[in-house]
Structures are given as C-alpha cells and as structure tokens.
Amino acid sequence: MANPESTPIQPSEGEKNVYSVWALPPEDVMARIRTLMNSLRSEFGGPQFEPHITVVGAIRLTLDDALNKFRSACEGLKAYQATVDCVSTGTFFYQCVFLLIHPTTQVVETSSHCCGHFGYKNTPYMPHLSLLYANISDEQKKQAKELAEKLDEAINGLSFPITRLALYKTDTGDETLKSWEKIAEQDLPSS
Image (cartoon, one colour):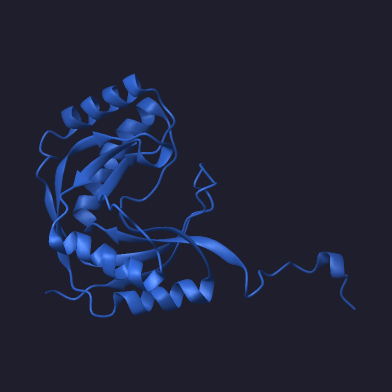
C-alpha cells in the first residue's frame, strides 16, 4: 500500500490558473527582438520572456476552459500584419519598455474577437510588444527607451506578419516569470 504522504498531488480538474493569448512574431523577428531584450535586461535587469503581442490579457480559467476558448477563438482568424509605431514606456512592471504596435483594424479586431470568446473586457486596447519587464525609475525607463532606439535604429516602422497565436499560462503574481509556460499554439492561415 502506497504511503499517502508520498503520492504526488495532481492539480484538480477544476483548478483555475491565469492564462493569456499572445500573437507571436515570426522567428526572424523573434531573434531580432530577443537581441534587443537581452541588451536591455543586461543593463536594467528584469526577467526573461518570449517576444509577444498580448491579444487577451490575464484571465483566470480552468485549463480545459482556456484550451476550449483558445481553439474556438482561433477559428476563422487569419494571419495579419503588425507594424511598430515607436519604442515607448509605461507605468507598471508589465509595461515598462515596449514597442507600440500600430492599432490597425486587423490588430484591434483580432484582440476584440479573441476577448469576446474569452469573456475578457479589454478597453481600451493598446497593442504592444514588451521589451523589458522591470520596476525601474522614470529616468531609467527613458534611458532604456533611448538605448533600444540606439541598438536597433530601424525598429520604428518594422512590419511583420502575425501567423501564430499562443495560449500561455501567465501568473501575473510571479514577477520572476518562472511559472509562465506555453500551453498551446495555433497557426493562422494566410488571408
């Protein structure tokens, strides 16, 4: 007979976690952005994370519910273009330094469509691709923004296709991001 204390605890089917939906840049753009992110992190600190544009923000669901909503939301979506307007800074950890993405109809409608499937209220939507998560001063944010613009002078105006969405487990209480993990990924067909 097994000792009950040595039996691993399995998450219950009804356990809720925090999930997000991300738009993923193509591999060549991912590599370029990772280089920029690594340089900023080495200068200003902060955790490592995958380059992404948040489509649906953090929402607490069961795994099954999150997967079902993700699959349903991806149906009927098509690949679309994303274009960087500029490097910008925000007011909190998860929007410290980022690339502001031009809010085209396709970018905004993809988020709105997915948020509808998830029952997520996301107003107003500010599409962005974070470069640095950190709690730093406004002066350091300004320095990080200037460094990003210097390291990749052609980043403003960069345009790339979004052909993949991913469902991530993203516990926003974990600022180390060690618990964050990709759960599913879906290719989007060409328009």
